Length: 262
Ligand code: F6R
Image (cartoon, rainbow, N blue to C red; front, side, top):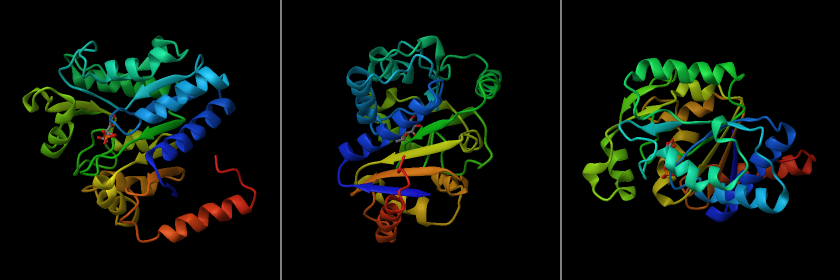
């Protein structure tokens, strides 16, 4: 696991955007896994800026989002489809036909989930998956207790997640209680993972995920099993880590060895 710590949210967003840019430059037809929530907002803004100012192109990129609320139609303002269109896709040259987000209105979640997995597999798998982390340790909407080998499926949201996400809805009662999410097993099959975390409210769970034992009670600890993970943390999100000095040292050593960070 590579742990990159920067002072601010803006700095980690730029660093992560640079990594995404490097991967798209290397492989223009990248299969990109995407996340929603507040954390990646600035990263998407940076990628839009790179599209506008640095000729970064998304025409050949195909994307798969991690999750979608169950019960919300794609035009609902709080749906993740709407989030992705307004925050990112509408501002770049990606072909919307190449963007995939679980269908929150499917009548048959099981059949849909199998189809979603098939689409990912059919395109050769996800090259780079972007992740955030919930305050209960979830990745995607894989709540504590999710199996490390879980696949895309309909899940019930934890009360903590419903309360965390109430800020996006007019009333807490409006927050959907379930979602379709890629499983932890699905996420671990991506060739590379990046996770961003910002703010003090994530500090304890970030430390548990990186430095604690593997446990389904902290779904993000599953990242320890993946061979190619980079975590981008701002100082507050990194504040409960015990090995910060080592992470800085490891980053410096890579640079001294002339290895490109991204
Ligand atoms: C969203 C997702 C979630 C979020 C997590 C953190 O697609 O998969 O796991 O990444 O809930 O959300 P924020 O960034 O709002 O703190």
